Amino acid sequence: MHSLQAANSTLSSLVLVEMVGLARLTNAFGLTLLFRGVAAVLGTPLAGFVAERTNSYDEPFYMTGGLLIAAALLGFLASGWGRRGCRSAPAEISSNSYRRADSVDT
Image 1 (cartoon, one colour):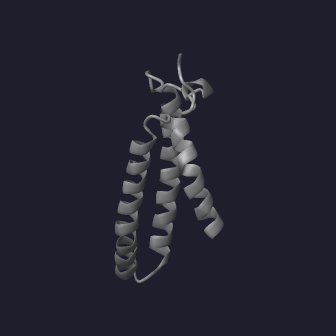
Image 2 (image 1 turned 60 degrees about the vertical axis):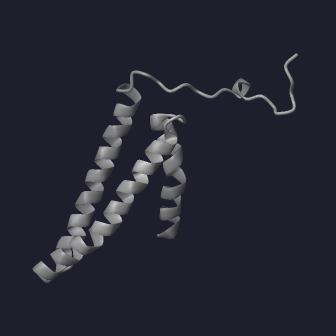
């Protein structure tokens, strides 16, 4: 279970770079963490409320599974939109765009 969480944390920045570009990575990563935090704060009490109301853990389990499937579908749609819908593609960083600190122009 922890290896899946580690893969998600590791790969999220790579996927964000592919979707929005390196120039917008910090904003995209901040928004991603914001939504993950809101989901973590609200998800557990909401599941507990549903479990108390229904006297069963089945409904919160299926609710969580449905929300995960919906999030996967939205992520899939967003990746397609990110590739086609963005008219101004971010500038790519080439190896020539950086100069060494000790090189001096003459």
